[in-house]
Structure formats: structure tokens, C-alpha cells
Image (cartoon, rainbow, N blue to C red; front, top):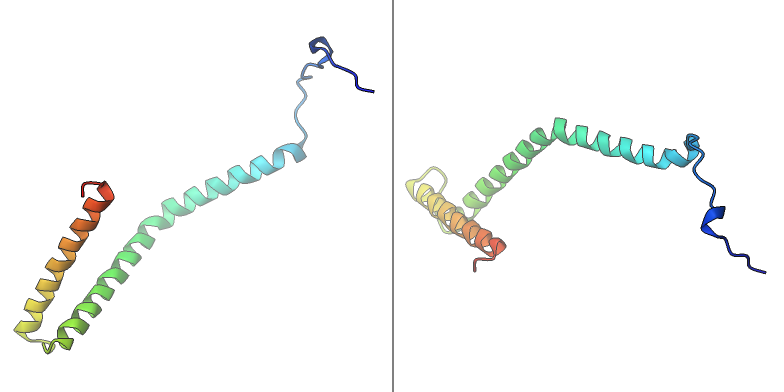
Length: 105
């Protein structure tokens, strides 16, 4: 047997504080978000610098590898010119990728 409840039968909020067990998940989630934000604020710049340094080292190794592959020995003027040309090619490629990402192409 089903009974229908009218709106007058709804019990109003008593104003009592909610049980700690009902608030715990939201409190833990909030604490986690705050801890993550603090971590990113404190360690973010150092992590970014480390990634950029690793990228610079990787590019330098690639440049040396490709230029030596084409017969330019380390310490020669031809290697320097090759490295400059590769740098220009990388810049043009990065510009194309940025234009693609911006939807201009």
C-alpha cells in the first residue's frame, strides 16, 4: 500500500549540525585539493625549469647526432652552421604547430 505525502508533511530542517561522518568525504576532498594547490605553487616552478633544462639537453644531443651523421665533426664551423640551421628548422616547425593549434591554418 502506497501512501502519498503532502508538502505539509515534510519535516523542516531542525538546524542541527550534520554528522561528522556525512561531512568527512567533502572535507577530505577539500583538504586534498588544497594540498595539491600548495604543492603545485611551491614545486611547480622548479619542476618546469627541470623539464626545460632536460629539453635543452635533448635538443643539443639531437643536433650533435644529426650534424655528425652528415659528416660535420664536433668543434668545426660546419657543425655550428648545421646547428644554426636545425635551430631555424625547429623554430619554423614550432611556429607551424602553434598556428595549427590556434586554428589559423
